[in-house]
Image 1 (tube, rainbow, N blue to C red):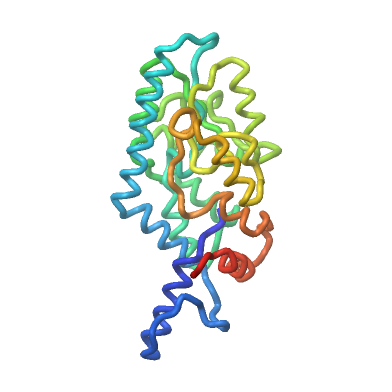
Image 2 (cartoon, rainbow, N blue to C red):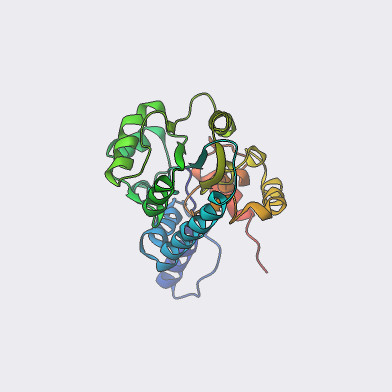
Amino acid sequence: MKMIRLLGVVLLAALAACKTGQPAVGHAPANTALVPQGAAWAALWQQQSGEYKALCLQAYQLAALRLDQYLAQSHGKPLAVVTDIDETVLDNSPYTVHQALNKKGYDEKSWAEWTAKAAADTVPGAPAFFKYAASRGVQVFYITNRLESERAATLLNLQRFGFPYTDDQHLLLKTTTSGKEPRRQQVLQQYDIVMLFGDNLSDFSAIFDKQPTTARNAAALHAAADFGSRFIVLPNPMYGDWEGALYDFQYKLSERQKDSVMLSKLRNY
């Protein structure tokens, strides 16, 4: 999980201005060691803002209306919906806060420690929608890039909130690739997938996989008719391929190097 840092940069600049009595400026001093505090502010928005909750509820309420429309149509196979897990049905913002306040980003060890707790809360609207889908005879498949070692804790976390179809058959974890298309194709062998849910564009189609920013944006515009219809997007300002694309998915860059690239992408006037 890679963190955003922009708001942290602005805060650091503001604090520096308060100490010197000079007006705050929108650039961090050259000798300031940037830390991923921006991720904490993104998580704070996710945890505390009514706007975040409203966006999630809007997404899932629209999804219920769309599902009813699909159910009224004829289909050659049983119906299914496919959903991502993290920031789509489970809220991992406490992990983001924990790492950011310790001046760290995502790493596999700390992430595994977090998921082992099975303590993530739900994304607003998610439990109600997927329970509704199941009540209408629609199967739910969870396609996630969590690892096989996280299977038991992931199922436990989902089961705590009564998510349907929380079994090994319906939980498709990452194996050899983070790309989800092979797993979607696996589901399509037996089911018609009427809707997909995610916080990252790659949760919907392979056309978004590991694409540079301009290509991702162009593909999103090209697929405009699918959003709010087949594709239901949940908000996630904390991390995602949108960030990785900014520095060409070079995840081994240092936090300072990532900060430098991200700052260079800002548009000012």
